[in-house]
Image 1 (tube, rainbow, N blue to C red):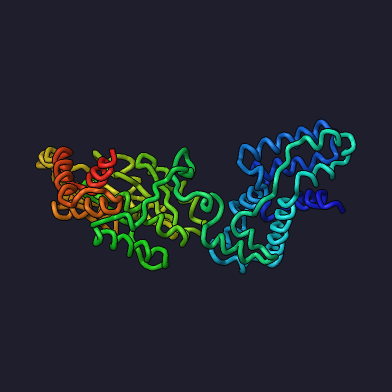
Image 2: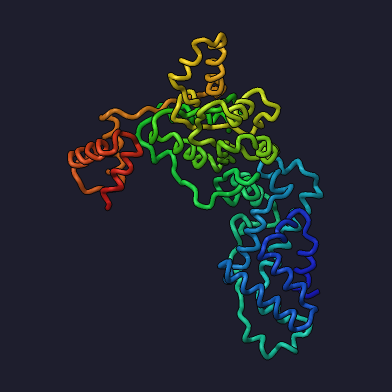
Length: 411
């Protein structure tokens, strides 16, 4: 049997990795192969469509990469099991099917444009223009497929280290329009980018490690002054431990009522998730306030075992407290109950970490560390004097202010 037809038949029979046929390049390539018995106009149209697509995708010289990358990012029973390290528990038939699928994808990806043209059933009718048609190159495969030797170990290792599906392709996510959406331009900050606040970060780090190790851990509230690195700490944790299966999903405060939907999306996935609620605060005990309380403790749709909630707030108790509120409660026989209600949300975070603005000494240490890392060609005295003027003009010192000052030196 001609190897081009054989590759077409094997693609037709994909089972475990059949999801790749929903991706644009494998789908267009399969349609091209299926047109080998069609009229010249249909075959050439499919050929042109396919070549135009791989040009748009930047893979006209690396078809093998596009095909195998689609397989690596496919979410299927083998990928999910391998990401959780339990692929060997799958039935032997499933493992054999996964192996056959990988071999079929590699065979198809290795086909050259000339081979496909010569395999066309009415090749003689297009011989005169065949030499004028654009050609693609196979190039190298993606990632672990380069090491594929008939064993699934290299593929399984990829899933263990990177997760499966879109959680292997992307690094950060946001809850939007009732679904988890990938963030294309995410913050790449890591733990080495920080200066100061070592004690606070260590608490968050220890809690995150306990979570990844399956030990006792807590939902975490990072509270304190603005610009002190609360949100950056959370994002750095996710970046630091991505290779251990940790993913970050940001959930806007106004969408907290949809938390059960998010739970349904992630509860059965093999990865672990930090559900990130940034800049959390309430003017009063609104519907979102009640929803978050139920999420943290006591609700039917509790967080799954593979998720932790990390929230940041400029307020220690999250809810805005005003003196006028207390004045109104003078005649309220349930004043204590009202106060308990106000404090009950922050109390449901088992770990609360405070971030306060740095003193002058700590602020200048942060500035100098950043300036030295950036290679600023000024003396320490000049840097410190400029930093103080910069902070006074902005009404206070903070790591954010330090970063803005150092960046201003390049202007």
